[in-house]
Length: 311
Image (tube, rainbow, N blue to C red; front, side, top):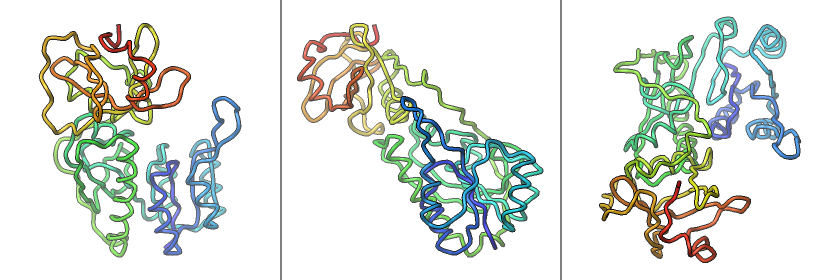
């Protein structure tokens, strides 16, 4: 067996390392280097740097058309394609290059098909997440499932933490299923399918009339990107962290207008009224400044107490 591994995301690096350790990865397909915003300097994907350090050849096509197919035919005799967070659609002609085709999808399919299952997992305050290894089909994440695993969430994870967890859980599943991966018969997905969509920067805008639970979930799902934001006295303020677990009971409001910064509580953060309770904001980022904890922010901005965020 020889593998072409397709990924543009560092979340896949532990899986990639494991497969390389088995001596099976012949090529990495990843996205082209992308220009850095301010300098324009081209930045390679982290998975590319990992591949080069491990002696794996790298291919970075703009699209998976005829040129890409001809390049792969000429440069590898791999019979297996394994994809994990690649970001491009595989067409039928491309898939015909391989006898075996596996996709690693971080959800319990058919739940959260599409590009942002982890975001959806946090937005919906799920208590359980999972990884599925599936056949690559022409429909979005519709292929038969070969293996799956589950893990629990504690309600404090932001996207950064969840991605690290999923990265290791995916490696564990691949390691456990490796011996049977090429012989296991897949099973059709059962149950109602749900879908995730692409995340937009504007999805991070906070409306404090929403419930405390919904705001807690959105803030965690949006860090480190796109970052939730509101405004204070007409200036943008990014909200980066919240105290506690979304599964814990939230305090009921006492009549303050949603968005009111009620107080600062040591060990918890800025107490802010919502549509049905309070949340405690632990980290913020004022415009043109670095991220900071709520205590550091309040030291230089004590007048924020009593103000209403977002107006």
